[in-house]
Length: 130
Image (cartoon, rainbow, N blue to C red; front, side):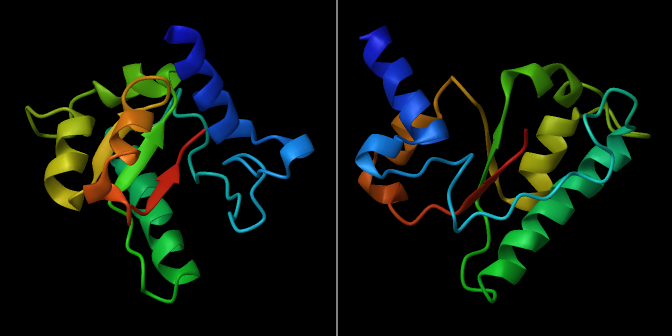
């Protein structure tokens, strides 16, 4: 089962050129834009929040306001940054984003695939941070 889940993750992320399937990394309809504060190694919680707002706005603009994002995929390598406390607050960045954006956050390699296979999420709109 784990091998199947890993194959699905790889297909979703990288696609398959032999089958003409595009993945998240190489899809022609996905705009690749760097976060303002980069990889977050020295970013403040407020800068990380600003990066999320920028990503959300890019999706809204690219879809002419038809598909506001309701999910964000975050690599597991960025999870540690999400546990920082917001400035002057006792909530983590992850909790703050969930509470203030209405988005669900998923760490790549965890529960993203199973969530998007459910019927109630057939119209999910998301953006990914790398």
